[in-house]
Amino acid sequence: MFFVVILIATIINLFIPANLCAQTVGTQSNHVQHVPFTTVNVRLVVLDVVVTDKSGRPVNGLTAKDFQVFEDDKQQTVNSFEPPSTHTLPPATITEGTTAVFNPAQPSAFGNSPVNILVLDQSNTHYADSSFARRSLHDYLAKEPALLPQPTTLLSIYDNHFEQLQAFTRDRDSLLRALDDAPNKYPWKLELNGKTEFGPVERLDQSLRALEEIAQNYARISGRKNLIWIGGGFPTINPTTIDGDDALVVKQALQHVTNVLLNTRVTLYAVDPTSSAAGMTEITDTSQMEFVEDAGDAVAGGIDPFGASDDFNNLGPVTGGRVLRGRNDITQQIASSVNLGNHFYTLAYTPSSTSDDASMYRNIRVVCLRPGLTATTRSGYYPGESSQENSSAAAEYDLTTAAESVVPLNGLRVSVDLDSSSSDPQSTYIVHVAAANLTWMPKPDGGATASVYIMAVSLNAKNKILGHTLHGMTATAKAGAKLDNAKEIADFSFTSQPLPKATTYRFVVRDNSSGRMGSVDLKLKNH
Image (cartoon, rainbow, N blue to C red; front, side, top):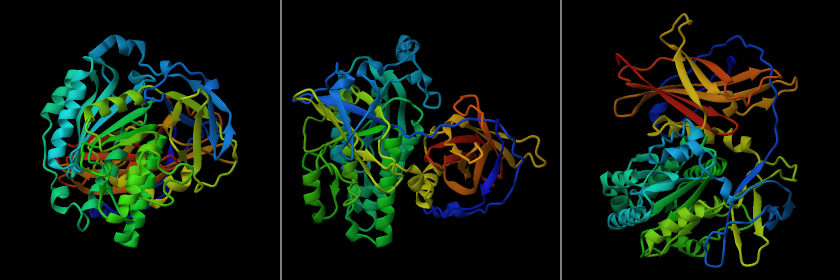
């Protein structure tokens, strides 16, 4: 077990919502127990690759010899290879059938199976098109077997909030019931303020935050996450039409959330139910039309995807997925997207480049050597997470998203207890974090440290923020500890007290190297 000391005592100037800056942060220090450990710091790039024939159907039965991987046009040596047949549920979970319980906080039940995340976008979709999308999704599910091959969850985005309609299940009928019971709400922000003032920016921000919540919630599920986004999609923002500072915030948020999706193996498949639209993205300015028409599924091959445009339409191909638009067969396209996402090969390699330039985008290309077959994977990555994830902008974005999240964040395994040994046990908590989930940075003496932010948020009965306390902290250990052991825990002593009228005290932990987050809620008494 590790003890910690505060590395930084600070408040980040969180920008959404403003009342997050209501409290200040104190300082404290604890004794550090010297525990031995070992650490390995090797970059490994993992690729999920879908291979299709000339008809667009997935192809199984290939071997490692059928692939070549290039990074920045230099061929790489593939270290490991997994065919689609290895991406399965554990035998015990298969035996349980529709009664199997899938909890992202306890990911062993998922095994190495891919999962499907169905998102019904009712915020960026016109009301009539949203009804069509619901019917199409219902028709898709109704044609599936009663026992689904992969765990599937159903989510929805409305104006001002994001909601889980059905947790992961293999029971098709549970998903159908959840879909039938879901309210069909009118998208007021789109219909009344769709292209004026801050309407598009607000909806883009909401969509990005929902994506981050999804990625952080399911981060510890080891398999690929196929995100099937059904709806009008995300507004295309022309950077020249908004204030320069706001344009920079949008660009940083878009790039950051994309990194989170890539790091957690989320692949986006977007299906647009709006047959009259030129593209999946809502066009808020005529200057965007040419880009959207030209982009399609083959966006930005061989270049930094964020170098020339902030268009959200890039997210599909950048993550290894696709964007489908202008189609009337929405039910079939949902089925096709799910099918592609569940038939994939996994290749891994250690890059031959030794450059540590975190800002230099590494372009990836996978070639299938079998004639007539096409390999699709994510377009690349940024090699240095620390530059992006340690930035104040990234931390601000993550913590404000986590503060009001409607789903628990499971990127880190987190629990919390009152510290009964403290002189003030009513305001001192021990925050427990699984050591194996943290990023440990080596020290010259053979030790290592893990740097985190820990935030305690007071929430009222309506899940609104009353205030928060934020500490920057670090865990320290010496050479020899088995930090990859699931039983090893880093304990953080955290002093804070919930505000009056708070009904929930939420603890959020953010690893400042990877950006992974975990959260736990304490229900309060006598508040």
